[in-house]
Image (cartoon, rainbow, N blue to C red; front, side, top):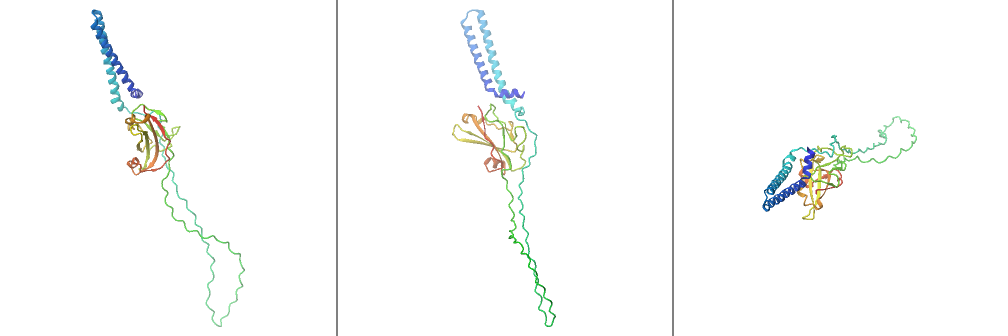
Length: 290
């Protein structure tokens, strides 16, 4: 059922054209039947003309009902049907822990103190026996020279956040894809085997995926951007990246997109560009809205 609704939405314009052609064909049949009825004098031919006129009315009525049915399905039934993307298999969420870089401690050399020397004794009193003179100590080998003590290491500042995530891999829409629907589904962060390269959800309050869509405007001949900040590694069609309003304004119906993991105080700051990149900017993919 979902595939039929998607097909109906994709080719709705062609179905409308076919219905209009059928209505015009019925009008021509009706005019021909009335002309034949006016120009003939025979009852049998007038009855045949009446039958053709009746069939023409049925053709026009059927084409009108067909156009109304297609429009009603696209307007009321399709938005109410939950859309599940089938082009990318949702991988199992795996907790992602960013690496923590700790400063290494610098070893502090120990200080070597010289041997203590004997303090001089008090002057001997007169008449006291003179103690025997101690034999001079044999000279010993000179101690090896010691290196000057290095100053104690100062406290290093705490490391700041830098590029702690991999470059996001873009998945959907693939590069060069042509999309007929009004809303575009985006997905990134999974490898060719369906495994997560990026967190499925950024749980930190100040981290966002920043999706940037660019196109060249026909009216101003300048590059315009549409920015979307999200915690998830994708945007589904129900929450909506509806860029159908820009379909006719983009030169050659061409759009480009990329994704970056950023740090920002809030979603509004992420949108405004007050960010600190936490990953390299992904490759730039192109898609078309014919």
